[in-house]
Length: 223
Image (cartoon, rainbow, N blue to C red; front, side, top):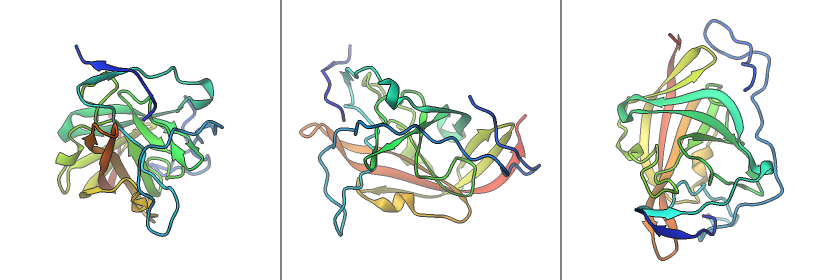
């Protein structure tokens, strides 16, 4: 989490599609690379070495955190795609977050979901990893605060270019921050939703991650 002052809380063109919603010709937008890495939080290296870390998707709960202005080179990419989780009352835009020096900086996500570069474009075949905050910089609850409450077969919907891609939850688990299985490859279309869990005030970071995985079950025209 970036160093910050804390005080108590007082577009682009759609890809060509078939009637079933499968893109044909255009490739998904690629978040712009940058040269400034995100500060590395306290973590444990994964087995076998390396420094993979699932992004920190939360600020200190109940504390207002000042966040520096987002540099132009770290701007997120617009996608014109919406993420909806009906049982949680969540409906937020998806933006592309660039991967820089092996990590992603999601500090500037507010009421948005971040599509992590390196994962599949949302609605395409493969594993699309989307993240959002459990607590915002305001100290208030973020869009994914209740993510751990999702159950088997709950719906996750991606609204993309006039169609809605309906996914059904298959797993909901808590993992360590360096669990790279979050990015495991899939042949079919999956979404993996990620947020933080277990804030540690001593280190000003989160010990765990909530990971929800869902598989595409149907595609419908959006009304």
